[in-house]
Image 1 (cartoon, rainbow, N blue to C red):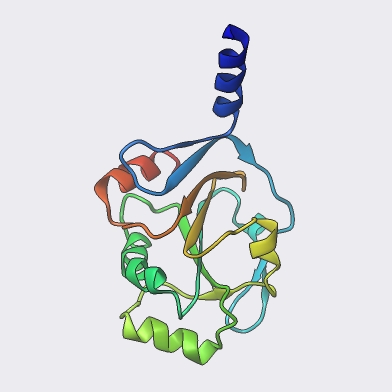
Image 2 (cartoon, rainbow, N blue to C red; image 1 turned 90 degrees about the vertical axis):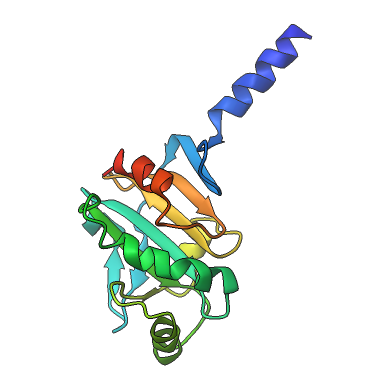
Length: 169
């Protein structure tokens, strides 16, 4: 019986842990490594995440029809201009097959001023990152490795979240 308890403890500790006091964040004890992650800008140019190594990167996956995405997007817009997170790059990636015009209307309705929007290439990034729903945000360290994941919506202006995020900036 003692062996079983130790074995279960070891298995549970090798996977992810929630960050205390912050809703919806799962912190990975062992980072997830990816190679060749690409997405598209508004002009259909391919962007490679390898080009952003050296920065803390937040990939936020959303769609115009997603109510929780609407709820969190204004706080994400404010996070990008937070003066203590100068090394943070945020890429809101639309995976809802929405047009540029529809995406722009979404931003305009929510008064999003500081963020650009991007698109999946077509939906390969969502598959490679094993997304199970939106909104989902992936946090990549300065080496381009996933160290945490936010499943569901979050208030990106939450002081506990910002203090936690500053540890990786």
